[in-house]
Amino acid sequence: MFDIAPDHAIGLYAGLLTLPFALLALRLRSAARGVPGTVLGASVLMAIAGAIHLGLVWTHRGETITALLFVMNGASYVVLSQLYTWRWWRPASVALITATLTGYLGYIVLNFDTPDQVAIATKLLELTTLGLVLVPVRGETLRRRSRWSVLSVALPLMTMVTVSVVWIDDLARPDAQHAHAGAVLQATNDTASPEQVGAAQKLYDETVAAIAPYRDWHAAWAAGYRPGPQNTPSTHWMNQRYVDAGYVMDPRRPQGLVYANTKHGPVLIGAMFQMQHIGQFGPDPGGPLTAWHQHQNICFTPFGVEFSLMTPTATCPLGSIDISVPPMLHVWIVDNPGGPFAVDIDSKVVKQIDQG
Amino acid sequence: MLLLMQSIFWVIAGISAAPFALAGEVFMAGLALLTLLLALGTCMCAIGVLWRRRWARTVVIGLEVACLAGSAVLLLIPLGFNRGLVSILVNVAVPFAVLILLRKDREAFS
Figure 1 (cartoon, rainbow over the protein chains, first blue to last red):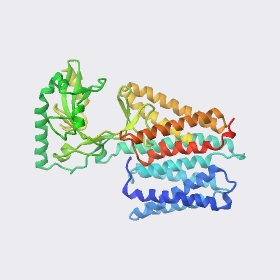
Figure 2 (figure 1 turned 45 degrees about the vertical axis):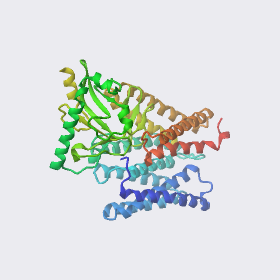
Figure 3 (figure 1 turned 90 degrees about the vertical axis):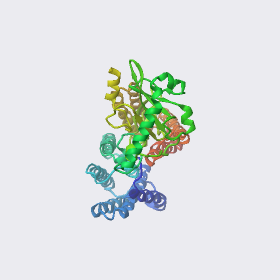
Figure 4 (figure 1 turned 120 degrees about the horizontal axis):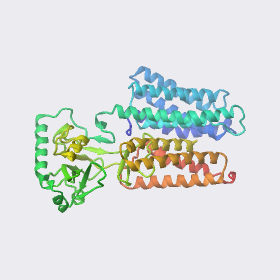
């Protein structure tokens, strides 16, 4: 959802290239004089949307129906972008935009396509165009009230539905690298080879042995580890010296330790290796068993150190900011259903430790 | 129109925090409420701009300048702020466009 699909990039270039030509067309046409700004704005946005759809024809030429729909849709947008003086321009534009939005949602629900940045940006463009087409202009008396009513209901509703469907589809059908919401997993081979299984076991054994002294949290404190906020069942204790030094997957110097916050005090449940830079995944000796993960597009708030997920429209709740953190790899030294290198510790495991 | 879209984006952001608040993130509940109030305020300002109210224009300009400044800071500092197409459109292009549209006809507002 937050990437640009390679076969959609051409649509973006086509849209950007069209912008100056659409503006030029408005300037050159005498009919554009006296036409309200909202109509002209809609004309430019429709020309861009048309170009995006026409641009996508080339990369979808292997899918006959989709390519045909792109041609029809793109051509209709381009034609309507120039017909703004036509009597039926508004109804025709509303029908085309609504049909395009509905069709796209149907496409992704039926799993014919997956949403990406070009698709979401195009949908936002179309929704804005819909608003510009619906908004009554000065001096217009015919159906003014009903147009305002439609605008105030239809636009928010269509935007909410579009964004919700895109988001639900993305969360419900993630690809292998986005199986964990809010994180991207390192690309690996599908099945671990015997050598990778052995390497993963070696890393696990070395880490368990190396962090054993930190079962006593006082030793961790003395080594420079400091806890983050403790209002959650488990807490990461980070060693800033090791983070700054940039040790790479060194079992004797893990950047973080993870403690369960129990009524008996902190109980060591794992270690965490972290790279220094965003996008820089660490070595992966165990293949799919030891894939690193990078938390990205999460909305972080310093108030209580809480998280939520960034929306498809790239917004976060007020008071929180969108951040990504460098790749990390956990090594869980307690029995974790997800495995010893899973992205997260199972909350039931932490609960059991607390009760035990 | 852009203000209405912006308001809808904030409604979505506010609602998106609700599941996390229900899962025990208490501060997120407050932030969700604040975000929904911001969305409501933006919508009211949009109506104010439509009615050519000077207070609405002033508030909107302040809001958009704050949005642009916040986005600029987040784009400059290495926190991993999303630099995707949608993020640039929503967090930079929309506030910028609103400022451009409100810049020229100050006299039209009372």
